[in-house]
Length: 257
Image (cartoon, rainbow, N blue to C red; front, side, top):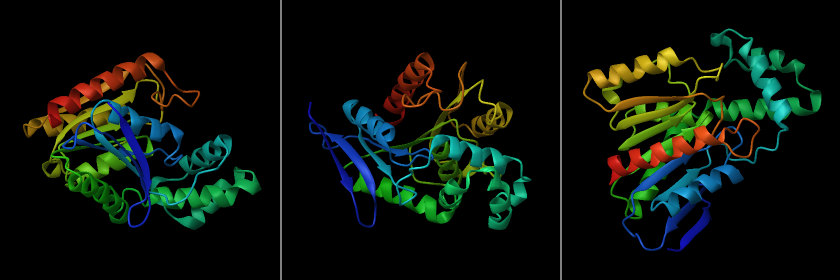
């Protein structure tokens, strides 16, 4: 089997890969982390193609993320000190990130502004464009998955009634305002028990609400930290990543096959 890949530009900027022997391959939308459509996300797209799917990673930011990790993390920690209602107020964010080295502040603000649109209609519209692209190229069914920022967007797209047959959020918090009746597909999420930034009880409650409506919903928990699937970062947890990948492929095979 030969895998083809290319970068899309125009109305939809994305990285896409597909197997040449499956013109009617099911589709997978991969939503990136705060690092954008980087080498790691492209490798995940390639892995899905090797598993027999047409996969696409849409660019929700529109620019390359070149921030130093320590600057990004400092910015996120600073914003976490703000009350939730103030975290979307530019003036409050600007004040909070004064702890970030001056040369990185503009980049942090730019990234925060871009990330804030991910769960809004304009961000979810890009996800829908990616779903449409897959269907236009023959995918009979489509799944959406995402990591960290992308996990949050995956949840948001599902609760907005987004068109997909399966959703697999990785360590992304579910939105506070969630209507389980709008979720169209099955859900299996992947989270780390050592992820101090994402409490598990709200996720379990969300899954229980979906199951109460007769929907398939499972929350998988691993003894691992946040971002355990990213093999380019220090948080990578090989055993958890391997099991999560196996479970995701089995879930997609059942939901999309």
